[in-house]
Length: 117
Image (cartoon, rainbow, N blue to C red; front, side):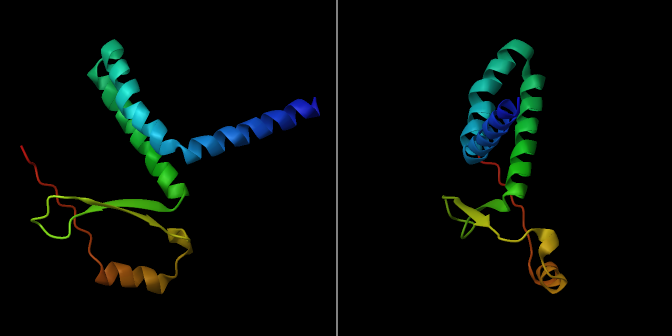
């Protein structure tokens, strides 16, 4: 009996590790292939709900791994977008108050979206 419990715990840990390592590939498959199949069977609203669920899990995954993905351009005239992945070693709650205040005071975050037809 104890052997089955240990074997189940090891299998669960292996599954969680595999999902963590390959989450980007899994999320891409869920957002494209699986979502298109869901739309054919259940409709567009189900596909939207599925996209929201995958985005929520992706945000949780990134938060657990202290990872942020930022898409930037060096200038407004650039045609290419740079994808920058930032990994930090400390969570937000572990940072010092002085560092948080410095970021809040001196840094700015700009969300700029341009529609191109």
